Length: 390
Image (cartoon, rainbow, N blue to C red; front, side, top):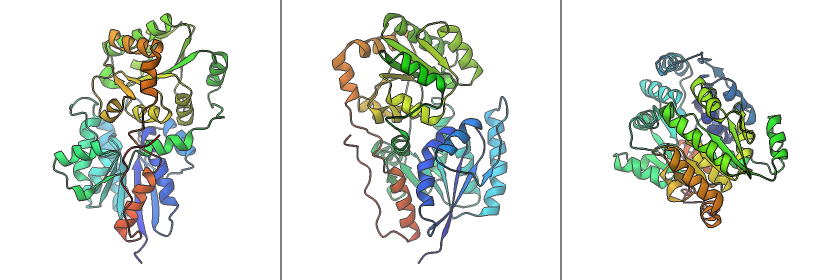
């Protein structure tokens, strides 16, 4: 029997916590195999801990790096320095990171410095544009280079890595852990933590809900203004629609959102909501408009069409599956797609009856089984994720 192994899971933001939560829970189901250490950098603070609480997770260590107006250089230098000490002292057998954040790229680099194997969950995503999404596109590429286990969500991601010369033996198609988390979080009888949401949904129950998010730095300025103008036009033209927009804490996003959207009786500008509220809001929405990466994976779980207000995407599977329309950031283009989805029932049905290209709820189990196989506890590797039948 192989010796129990120390697995260190490192993340720092709410999206990482929501996508890694199911993986940590699965690792913790095997205490005879793994000593699981959870390290957070605190790149986010309040929202991070809301997500941790949802998955009943308590960090073994929090570096508490977040500060007001933090820069990428500050986060990077502080995370590298802090994680270097932690990893040196703990000397784990494997480090798991997720996605494309500054925390993830720093953890991957420091693990490499100490010659400790790295497992990259959500590897292989590519927009093929250096500055979009920024800085995530390059972060993800760096992490893939130092990783020893490349846990890709789909065959599209696998093929990206194969074209770049990564060995096939290091690549595992697992599905997307965001799907696991969304399925675990959704409740038909859910009561929202944000009381305003309960009131809005009750008062507007005869209207179709459009859920909006926006936060990408490359959309700051004129692109975001155009995005929000299109949303106001949609609300003006469709009296059976109510818009719910949990506004990001970025001062630039908030200033633009309130300048363009404030004062409309059916546009509800809220403070950021927690992860369970967002997932259950998605499930009750008619349509989603966003520039987010993760929402492309989450909206399709509930068969909700998503208009992506970006010029490109590192998740082309959603566009190919016809669950996402890549609309760009021009006002007329966004408005045209939204208007069609609100008036053309056949077009809406074509987008809301697609199969999920990202996952089947078993990604976390596959990842832990692969790790267990590597260390000698499992005799077989899991079957790879193909595409959900639902």
